[in-house]
Length: 258
Image (tube, rainbow, N blue to C red; front, top):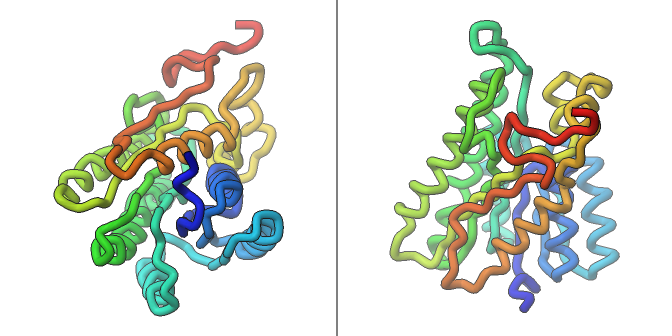
């Protein structure tokens, strides 16, 4: 059963990767879209394509989730236009660097904390009152297996994703007695632009992350998000963890030649 037709979905970081894949999958099921990201040209192309292909209402907005005032202004504008989001997908996030803590860049740390944690908090804080006023809604965080298991040279990234996991659990408690659901979808190794961003555009180094193995694709994660979002209203999927078959733990990967 398709319970997503006619729902309005707000997706952050929707210009590429998992965010763009989620937009496509929701559009295929007849959901209207509010897509935000920093790269507005990509967003406009995506919204135009999906609106034309699926006959939905798709809108693009340039947004940096680390800008608190911009986030609240954006959501206030949606409320004024009566564009109430039924589903929020907190997808915007990033990893920076690959160093031991004692060698890490504080600039990288700030960027990850500001995006992965504070940005998610800003968007959620802005949207939740809208959902509470209607006693209806679903918040879906894109977490990571990094929020369940630590691994080398990722201490601060791990910390941000552990925080997302804690927030998901705490939000569910805070929202007890309402009809608002909170879920987290936590993927393992997924081939997107994530590693390219982590290594400051070094595509050759980024390619080694996925070399000689079969990672998840953005569409695989989007499938999981759709499954969570499409659950009956009385079902709240707190957490969904998925990894490629070639990965059974952050440090254990089946690579050709191993």
